[in-house]
Length: 340
Image (cartoon, rainbow, N blue to C red; front, top):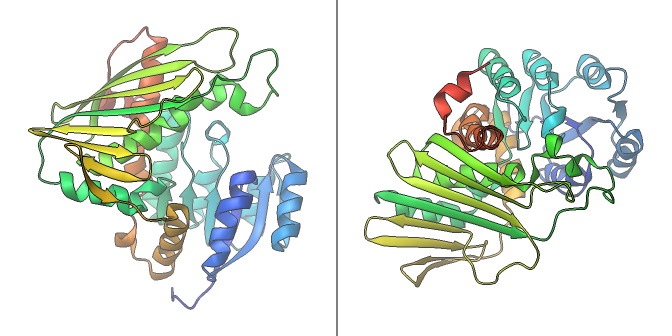
């Protein structure tokens, strides 16, 4: 496939993220044509089609996603639906030779994620997951600095306001803990992935505890413990309780005889001194441009990760969620990933 050849892209999931980020990014590449969109909300799909001059609209009712895959000539599927929606649309797509961009989290069970991954592997298509921060120079600089360090412990913390009340929520999927997994799933796969990216380590074991109260639709807090494959440890805290503490680093990486801190998307400090001050950067756009270029050239070396690698960021979070259901029991990640 030549870089001069335009790619035919279908969008599966027409929420605000597709409308405001992914589709505008794809059109900026000037290398794609959006040929079809599909969503459970027919009005949202029709609005996107009108805004971006997309010729074909499909509704997920009556197997619309599968009809889209059958009827359209598609090179790339952007799957931007919530994780709980994913079943085998992506499997069907890759079996047809369609390259796959999967937003994160990729699924809410390893069974579904593994089915998609197996199909990707067997079809030999190009794939990636929306772990956009791997493309941000800030995290690349942290990875470079830590390359020769002996990691001891990683700490991640995320704070937010109170969750929606159970009896006043708008009944969105996000306010359903069984569907959304709360902030620990949404941000946890990011935090796990960027920790893996920065340190070069994979998670070997995981456990977690959730603070859930009937007044609130999702968890007030979630606390995760990881053990990496080199014996290093990690803690992840997701707290939804009110005002956000100021001047707290998102990531703190302790290594033998030192400490690296990442303050939001702003800067890296090492042992209290600024190592790197970030400039404005759009990792969403960079990832989309790179993925499209990889498909055009069939060069996967320029991608920061593929669907298979993404499983090693998803599994520890899903294992932590399962651990919380088991009162904090420790879960072996390799066994969890292979458990059907």
